[in-house]
Image (cartoon, rainbow, N blue to C red; front, side, top):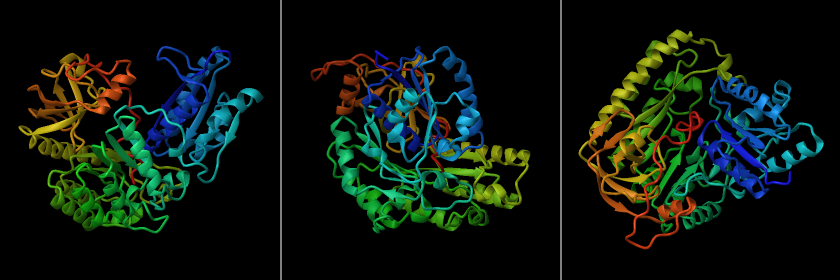
Length: 494
């Protein structure tokens, strides 16, 4: 090809996959590719897959099937499949979809450019899956999607053996990065304009287990508090088993660690938790919630819940509802149990009929929505500082609103009156006027604006020259955001 080839990365699954896709984009751009325009046919399409949900296989092969005639019409096009489903299915992908050119796993994303070149030269499919991590993803080039917020992987893999989860088999045993490497990346991201980082791990608060420091995660949170210019620190997803008091103290005492916690419950029944091999019980989970609320009364706690695990009785399900009532989650990402081949739960007795699972699921969603709505309603009349996003609300354009996240990560849609120069990455102080179960609205105008280096970085990325103080830039585009990967909020459910 004489011209620079174009690429498109399609991401499914958890935040770790989103992070990996930024690395895949960076690798391709390092190799001379450029991102394809929205209305153009890419020279390379990369699927970064998830294997957690039951229909993951159908979704992938359906998308590959729809792409086949496009490839037939564009003979130079290459299709690559990576991620957790590729690690699981391996050569099966090329057998079922022989028009795929490259299959790579979770441990060797760094090899994608070379595999694409080999596929082109040899004109045959290249399948390369490694059994353990070869290069830590965060050492690779990256093309970050956001100018103002960034993911930072502190570990990959998981040492747990939850009976419903296939992730440990696909991501491997936990591998921890050295604290100095993590903080070096955080400082570099802040230097580029980011003011928010989210620390990522399949079991983020088990960080340090590989090098034998049980307090490594709380030390890392406190160290992030020392990074000048870093305004917001988040992390996901922790495991209740490893959630220790020193982490709660670090969260409460480090000003830039946000008052937000996403901690997967999975079930409120101690009997079901044992069958899930979750290594904590209801009392332990509720005890953590109580300690977090005592240390940070305004913290928003979110969770993941699976309904219909094999053998779950009505009494077990009622225990889950009890925890939802007591924990007062700001939001819950709820899933109907789905069999994953290769997991112990798939072969357990007591698989529940679909209609039973559906009925319980609807009751859970109804209860959680009522809790979320009540928790959000309590915030009407308060003021929050919102980190302005590029667009998280489908109706923002019609209503002349922008959207962003409050410190506790609640989504806020706000009227832009009085802040025409507000840019994504800037911080806006707004008063909450209305609450719904899944978002807040601030329609009384912007009360104050703090322009940030992150806003400058967004403006530079979008072709605007830096403005002298006091001169406002034009409004960013508002409207529907780019499609988010399915299940991104809940991760793999650590």
